[in-house]
Image (cartoon, rainbow, N blue to C red; front, side, top):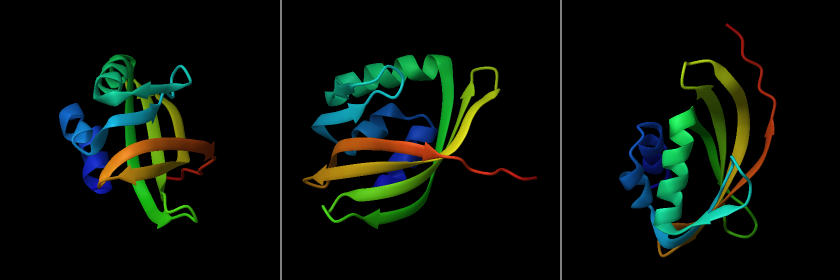
Length: 117
């Protein structure tokens, strides 16, 4: 389910990603801080975000933490609308699921990633 969510996010296909989320989802607002709530809040946030930047996230590794949350190591590349890379890093997305749907997501601090080639 999370792989499908990442693929849909990269498309971007907002409605397909929202289908993987609990109606009362709590999602981090990486642009302004804080959180957005519910499908409407996530839809509005991403619509605004995608008007200014072009993010791409590639899941690298999945594991469960001691609390039963799913931790996904993600390679994240964020470009501006002209294609200039603004950020290239690895972050951890931490998911709490309820009823098979994403209830919350947390973004942990990025670490540097060396890019060669």
